[in-house]
Image (cartoon, rainbow, N blue to C red; front, side, top):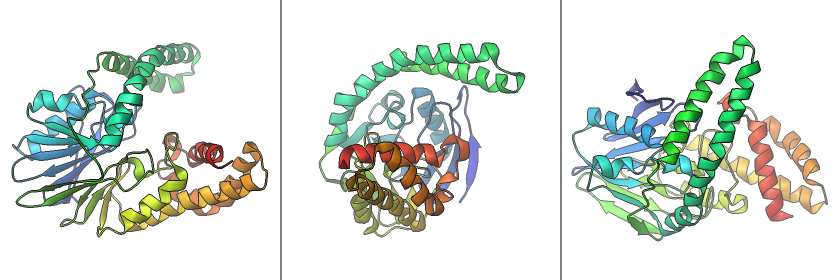
Length: 331
C-alpha cells in the first residue's frame, strides 16, 4: 500500500499516515497523540467522497480536508460517524464548512447517543481540562530535565485542546438510518450496517463488498478495547455477524489496516475475557480477585498481540477496565 506522511499546517498532534487500501479507498492512520485521534477512511466515488469519522477536534479534521485536495478534486458528500465517542465526531463541523452540501450520516441509535450523552461530555471536557492544565504545570515545576520537553509539549497541547473544545460547534448527523443503508454509485456499493451492540449501543460498520473492505470504528481496534460504554456480553456475537461478510481488509478505528486474522484474535480476547470474568464472579470472587485471576489466565495468550502500542495503550491497564465493566454487568 502506498503511504505518505502528512501533518499539515498548525496540525499540533494531528499526524497521519495516508495509505491506499483499494482503488479510490484510503485510510489516514492516526499516530499516537496527547488527545487521541481516530483513523479516517476516505472513499472516492464517481460523484464525490465519503469520509468515515472525524477525530477528536476540528484542527485534526482540517488536516484531512487539506490532504483530500491532494487526493481528489471531488467534494465530500457524506461524512459517516461510526459511534458517539468524542474522538470520532468532534471534527464534524469542518466538513459542511468546507463542503456546504455535505451530509453527516449515522444510525438513529448513535445520533440519539450524541444528543443524550455526547453533548454533555463536551461540557465535561470544558470543565475538566483546566484541572489537567494545572496538574501539568505542577508536574513541570518540579520535573527533572529528562521529562521537561514532554511535559511542556503536553501542556501546549492541553491549552490548544481547551481552546478548541470551548469553541466547538457540534455538528450532529443530518441523515439517520435504522439497521442498513446502502449507497449505489456507478463504480461501487457502500453498505452502512448496524450488526448489534459492541463498543457502543449503535456501532456502524461500513462495508465495500466489491473491494472486500470493512471499516469498523472502535468495534475492532489495534489495542485493548475501551468498554466503558460497551456491551462485553454482546460484543463477540456482533463480531461473529461481521465475520460473515466477505472481506480481506479491515480499517479499524485505531491502528494499522489488518486482515481477518486480527479479527479472530480480537474476537477471541473479548469472548475469553467475558467467560473468565463470568466464571470467577459465579464462584463468588471479589472484583480485585477477578482482576488478578483473569489477568493471569489471559496474559499468556493475549498480552503480546495486544501490546503493539506499548506504553501508549498498555494491555494490563485496558484489561483491568474491561474486567471491571464486565464484572459490573454479570455479577
